[in-house]
Length: 207
Image 1 (tube, rainbow, N blue to C red):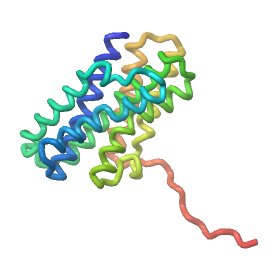
Image 2 (tube, rainbow, N blue to C red; image 1 turned 90 degrees about the vertical axis):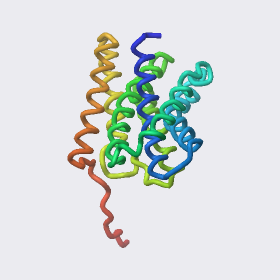
Image 3 (tube, rainbow, N blue to C red; image 1 turned 120 degrees about the vertical axis):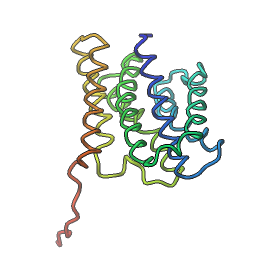
Image 4 (cartoon, helix red, strand yellow; image 1 turned 30 degrees about the vertical axis):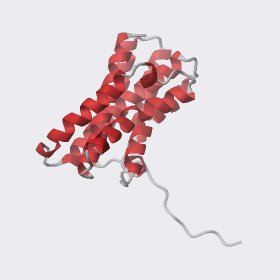
């Protein structure tokens, strides 16, 4: 496997684990709760990806990801109080995670023989499932259900990566371009509250 894939996967685990631990700090959980939330968020999306692609679940075959999640949980447990405004930190950690995992999910789907559309959907699912688990379990409104662009950013990261891969550009270029596209869109979403048009209820037609 390409070294950059491994690096991106580890980075995705780190930032998502940090976002899970930050939510645990907001909910004033104990150390076990921190470890649980960091692990669920850090490996949740990758677990779904591997199960759907019929691949060995990455953290079972290589428990390094779980150790990383637990280490991040321990670090945040003792340092979260130093971050006065934790929610913005959570948003930016999550933004990094969805861009990273949008690319990773798509790439691993392509390596497993999936077509372009399936690879894009897999990237989006990989990037959003861990955060969805985190928010639902902690009783938070899932970020994916808020009006700001969120899943769109993961889909954009995956799409850019897949398109450039099909154009036979080197992996380093397609992966970095996909990450940049997804992260920049999410950054604008956070800073400017960008959102896609939403459905507006209208009176039904009487027949």
